[in-house]
Image (cartoon, rainbow, N blue to C red):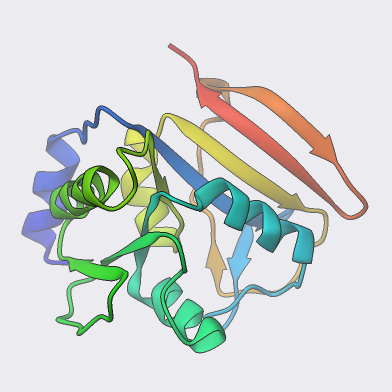
Length: 184
């Protein structure tokens, strides 16, 4: 994105009638990725992600999208993928491109209405830059805490936990599922 668009996005808050939900798996050291992939394999987390996002639009950056395409061979089934990128990409059915935050949200809203039976949530699924850009607008965070400190080249952005309250926690062997809501 150009600096001008970044500055404009920072001054105009994103708003939606739907709940904006960030969903992320993050290690204790803040790492969320390495070489375009997750530096761990936790099948329960992948299932958790699928169950949470199924039937909803999911906004993500190009690198995250390309990693999913490499793994699955297609966009996320049962969801509309909105790819936030400055590049012009050709996408198959089930994915659309947006070049700024506002158009990403607009495309996700349209998909929620037209493809997902008026879904009540829009998910934001990374990478770091996309999380950072959407974080001020998120209503909820669904976080899988990976209790490890792997090496990585992508980290979740800093966030003020005092602005959020934990509404659920499920501790497992080596990881925990947490859900946060923004405090009023």
